[in-house]
Length: 83
Image (cartoon, rainbow, N blue to C red):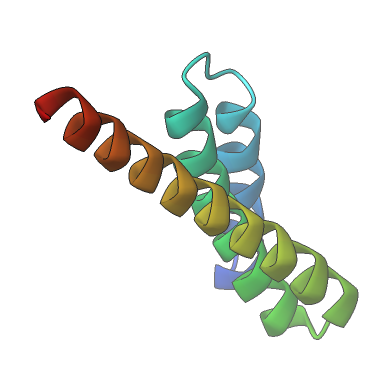
């Protein structure tokens, strides 16, 4: 079986997204899903599949948004508890 870089990228992206769906911790889910989506966006670029790039790029941005929001909420809670 001779796999090229494009196929490896596609399989790596699929594996990361699949692993993310097994996470109970939402932060871990979002981080691993972000990695999978970023890999899928790269894969889509490599094969010229712009719907794959756009969709996974959007999902990656959603993950970053919610990770940032979670971090800000945690920081706000820590500051409130310290006061």
